[in-house]
Image (cartoon, rainbow, N blue to C red; front, side):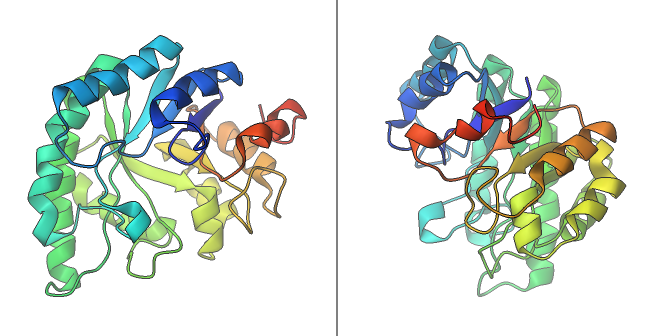
Length: 265
């Protein structure tokens, strides 16, 4: 299981529940999703339909985001957002339930933008509390909470791997072990981070890797990033998990690069 298709950004020409089967038809055995519901606490029928789409397709769910708010409108997580902290906490049981039933182990907790009315210090303290709760919620199913630096959102405070690792360190200081860095090579590169150094120093500790080329956030080979080399080095240094395909491309050509061997298998 080398690659997992992010069905929230790929195959979007199709209804969401048809995308796992389309990923399977394209030759992949694993998928991941951003939070696929409009609220933190969807009804049991909605959840069952989502789970059935994955199991019927015969793919493994490898990753699921906690509710991150309205991402098309600019939200980037609820973890550090005081006014919506309870929504995040209400989401934990639902996420853990889906993970338990589908065997998913990776759960991305987007940190949240800076907001008016709260200081960065207040938001950061809240984030640690919520990340502790999230890690405790998924620990019984062997789950790991992922913390991700993000590009393209000025108000999002985690820009580099060091930013995320600092947060992870605060959570681990509370006795939590199941929290790790989500290394999205696209976001790190676009933010000017030294991706090679991040890999050399932390690859064995990565909780997950995601890829897209830059500029453009397209498929591997459409930009200038040495994605093949970065994946290979990460694996040589101890990363054993799947690589998330989190780029933008039309369905007809989305996976042409894989057929031509343009990235590490």
